[in-house]
Image (cartoon, rainbow, N blue to C red; front, top):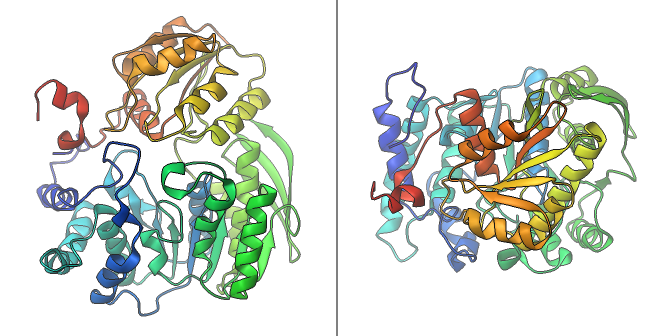
Length: 464
């Protein structure tokens, strides 16, 4: 059972509800490089949503897909909607510390009671489908249905949905959107989505399902051609950041960056607490998407919302002397952008990397990008079942000429790196959002949830 905030008594109803959800096929945590084929079949998700009455309209909805930055854009847009006084639902994945974080109302994770009630509402239909040829939904499909159901029950004024994987056949794509936003597209999940950026862009662009407005981040030319073609075929007006919307970084330091975002409609001055040029790009996508909603957001609301956004685990500075940062970069493209951010904000720092990676990623290319700016590395494995063994990661770094040693846990890797770092050095935890979550839990005393049935380390020790 999951651990909970020590200040509160265990929430038995929540624990039982979560156990029910995890009894379904949890495709995120299955080991191996390929996801079962039925993941990419929306028939079951449509049936689940239809039986729950979730396909009948709803509040204005922003749907966000992309390889890198979609969670940040989702968080920024939801923050601006809240700043405008709108009751806002936000659905994202994965979570850092608790499944409840995936479904948020007005910025707050669901309470255990609300989460348990949502599971109870959908569960009769889940059991019904399990006894039929169509089969039971997966954990992610059930969670997506829960989110849509909660947002309806709670009478939200606006909803932001982040795609889980891909877009065209992602469970979130049963929802009708007012605006589709596509962040930067690059190679990731190639075993599932395709081996070229054009193939992956085709999956992402599948969230364009009609003539709703579309916003795209700057893209590789091949990816942009695919997005433009899909938008044209659907009669969807396309706004491109870099062509129709511009973003200039006016100032930056380790507390944030000041941006000027200009659209055909307005000019926005934003103090963004998220660091890096890629976050400036994400802010421009968010602003453009917010302008396209039917909600008539004010400039003040958009500026205030982006200034107030919080999205943990993305170049998050935890302490100084030495600098201690966590960043969830988990594919070669995002690791390259992380290197640019380190060089921009801490150009003279010696970099001590605490590195973990999931086995379904392009681990060879990921370590290659990381080795390009790391002075020494501690390799770690999170508790996630798909985590690559630290010894295997260390071997990859050593072959690249970067000193690396294995640690028995994320916490041990952090402590060893901090002990080795001098003043002005950087200790950076990256390579996996799951490793970052454990770093935050260790460093900030957060009681994260543990799922023993999915914990390979627990299994190895005979605890399951």
